[in-house]
Length: 209
Length: 209
DNA sequence: CTAACTTTGTGAAATCACTCACGATTTCTG
DNA sequence: CAGAAATCGTGAGTGATTTCACAAAGTTAG
Image 1 (cartoon, rainbow over the protein chains, first blue to last red):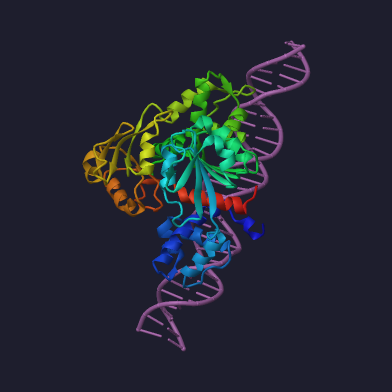
Image 2 (cartoon, protein in one colour; image 1 turned 180 degrees about the vertical axis):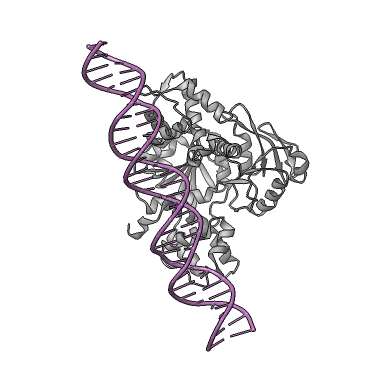
């Protein structure tokens, strides 16, 4: 695209976080905020916050800080908060159920619209307002969602992934321990819970603070 | 704390991932593996894998690759796989329940040994073999676990955190959207599910592959 | 045994991310 | 209104991580 292409990935990952806190401030009626205050709240160095914001131009005012309403509107536009991204969830096990019950729409522009599971007993149920379809009907019932959350057993991950990609999915949030293979134009974010826990344990042992 | 101190954090985060895949190869009876094969499996550049391994000395053999058994034994030692880290889980909601049911012990040296919740109806139950205690009894029933998983409502996050730290917890895996404040000697890993989903959506829109 | 092939380990370069520190500008106080 | 205080935006420095690319060493095949 244009200048946005230059935004560092590390910055882009922080944007939703910034948005959520700024939106909270806005809802609380706060008029202004400094990079220092924001830093205390989101635990990101204040210079980093200023640098991040600066990629979008001069959003603040010297000696004053940032106008909360202005920021919130800016981020809403930048993060496309007005336009909801529809998401499919595959695998209604413990974790999948948790996500369905979780209210993703709170301060959020993403919405799970359909779920799939291999267990026929679950099909036809609704969890958190989301209908559950059978995995065999994936191709018919998926509509044109472009993002999927994968909470299936690892053995099933690659097979399901291939089918999702066949249906045009371009982003996958993968909670399985499997590292899935996808074409270059598909983006995968891995969230590997046991790796997170293990690496936390490793850090505690070997990198005493 | 000798040479290990020099291992880059980025490398340390990948170690549990390497371990899991290498252990799988071992269980499958594979004798040798190259950095290239490993790269295809874990989706990490092969040069990065070689560099990561090299921090621990020369683990491989030129023209041959790595001996799987040797690797697996090496990582088992390095990641303290024989010594289990005991973990407490706070907040037995949807997400917390999912973790309790999840078998963290598979290829893993971490184990949830106790869970806490504010809902008296849940107290006394056992989920996934883990007893649920009342949050008021946190101080008495926690034992000396040093790692906690936080799956409580965000409003409760900071209060619980303070109590955990009072009990000597030094690592927290925080699944709440709240950014908690901790002393410098406590390590927090944030896993913010809605940020992950939003940032994936942002990347899809703004960083077409 | 030799030649062709494979694969590691690593210097060096490139890329990416973070932080310091300060001039410029605005706000605030009395 | 003047001086003090606050705060941004950013140049420049530092640090961390990734990647390239190749010599060295081992393996394999005939």
